[in-house]
Figure 1 (cartoon, rainbow, N blue to C red):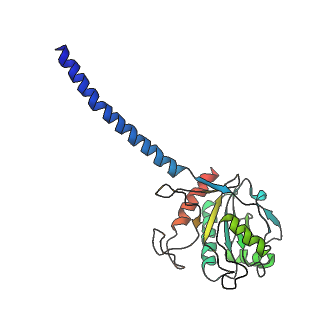
Figure 2: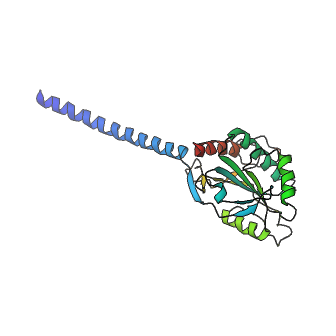
Figure 3: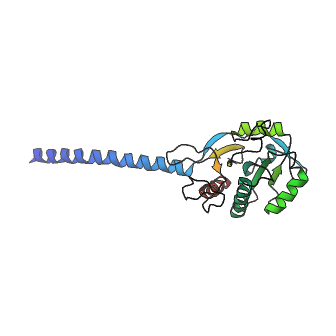
Length: 227
């Protein structure tokens, strides 16, 4: 009989050990998935910048330390994606509604976007926060700054490209780091889209699209950084 008990005990152990291994494996996968959902990737330090806002005030990246903020490139006369991006920014401004949140909108058409013109534009957009800065300055400087952000802005010397720009937005934390979430394949997305889409997955941009998938996740991620 003792021999049989030992055999039964050994059999139980053989069953329990694989179960425990699988349980640990699933636990590890769960913890890993939780990490990618809760944590944001650090892309890089925000490039240094110094430009003039709609109130004719110099604004630098150092002025924005201690705030979570977004950075976009646009121009006030843009008839296509800029109004869409500005509307999405306004929506985010209302949804976040936090004094530690700001927006930096950098014009790629400084010749026309003077501080006075940007002040009018800020009013037309309905910007409320004193920390939503519409910035202007030297075009060459702004082009180089866009390159440092890795956000596309057309070449100033190319008439057909000079006012082209990306609809991507950078998210910056209180310490001055560009941050982003991970996609479903656990890869950092780097930047967020400020555009509208005709599909909920955000595959086909459309100016009149009713879906804004990145706007929603951007609000979530801003709130994470404000905690």
